Amino acid sequence: MAVEVVVVAVVTLLLLLMSFLKKPAGLPPGRWGLPGIGYPPINRRPLDDQLAELHRQHGDIYLWRIGTQVMVFLHNYKLTREAFSRPEFINRPDWRIFKRLVYECNAGVVGSEGQVWQNNRRFTIRQLRDLGMGKSRMVSVVQQEARFLVEALQKQTGRPAPVPHALTVSTVNVLWQMVASKRFHVDDPVVFELEKLIDDTLANMTLISLPDFLPWLSMLLPWALQKRLFNLDIVDAMRERFSKFCVKLIEDHLATLDRERPRDLIDAYLLNMNENDCNSSASMTDLSKMIFDMFTAGSETTTNTLTWLFYFLATYPEVQRKLQAEVDRVLPRGTLATLEDRPRLPYTEAVIHEVHRKASVTSMGVQHAAVQETLLGDYLIPKGAVIISAVASMHHDPRYWDHPDQFLPDRWLDHNGNFNTQKEGFLPFGVGKRRCVAEALVRMELLIFTSALVQTLHFSPPPGRKLDMRHDSRNPFSHLALQQDLLITVRD
Ligand code: HEM
Image (cartoon, rainbow, N blue to C red; front, side):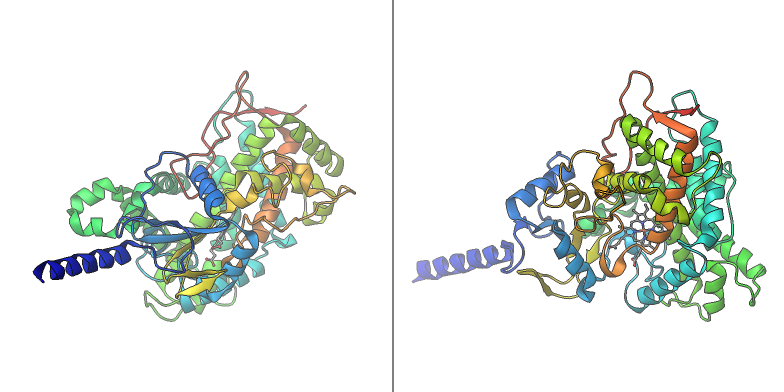
């Protein structure tokens, strides 16, 4: 009898343990692993290759639990569009990068949720539109920055050198004239410092985000050790510097605010503001986070896209020649593009779109989170699961693209040579409810910058070398171009 009791107890315990360890029924297939640890990414193969293998194994939707985070990957365009258009997938994960990197509250646009997000997103889109985003009003501002960039690049012609800091300054300046009526001088130490903080944070993203995946580590380890292990000094430096930068901008605006004539996004926000509650979409903290979001979401993405453009032009000289020929035909020397020229620059548009596709700067989009337990396709998605669009994979999927690995701008042109925005499988700015708020501005900026640059300059690898077209593996969430020498020459 005693033996029977022990056997029953052991079997019950084993069954309980198995049900505790087993992936709950109904969830997508994939890597589940152990509670609290999940299935750690110990394999040293590039993340893109591992995702490709999981895609082959499990299909368009699968999960990978890392630490405590259940991550659901989507490799299908229609499924991604469906998910990101539904309110059940509107949240952001509870990760440091979204919620606590600089301001510890529900604020700004990129990481906020609920009513705060709705108010701020609506406000930002309206402001950018009223201030001329994608319209002729902004054209002269963008042209001025394009001219400034060409001049800056001319200074380094004839000798191999990395893409200069002037590129970041010019992309920040386009945005900053809308956000703060301000442009920075190329030698302004502030942009340099802020850019370096963003670069350091992105390059150390794996370590910085470790506590998001293994939150129990924070309970076990002394604070001093955590700071060292997770590079939290970088986060502290970012927090301190950006807070100071935003506060100074807001103070300057308050001191010169004219209620009748709001100059920019900050003025418009200040006129809307009436309280100072950290979690309200009308507070100083919220405005600071909004400024931070604009700077971080806007500068690195655009700068990185243009850096990839330089690398692709240098690597594919025949594409560069064709692009130069189109620009020479349409724009007399010294004349910069306007929005009216867009239909006459189909190849320029095609090259820019092909760079978006091949580089896939936001290679995994920006992560969403499930607000509640819900069904997606045939699967149950648990509350809090992180939803990731495998953008780079979709941008190279043969279901959507012929010869996906080749750099072929002509794929964007129809039989008559007109530019044809192919939508299926293309999502550099995301899809659905949280789609990028600045797509129209970026499209206009890239058209004017690209045509201005190739009109005067030629890009090539340093003599006898090839450019390294791999991306910087230190940041698993995006495809950052590797810093390397490039040879820029002035065209005859
Ligand atoms: C080449 C340049 C850019 C690319 C590739 C890009 C891409 C993206 C992507 C993929 C998302 C996420 C969509 C989602 O959550 O599903 C996003 C969101 C966002 N982008 Fe951009 N972006 C670019 C430039 C900019 C610029 C210049 C700004 C400046 C205003 C900006 C502001 C934002 C904001 C505020 C969001 C958050 C939207 C939300 O959460 O509702 N982006 N962008």
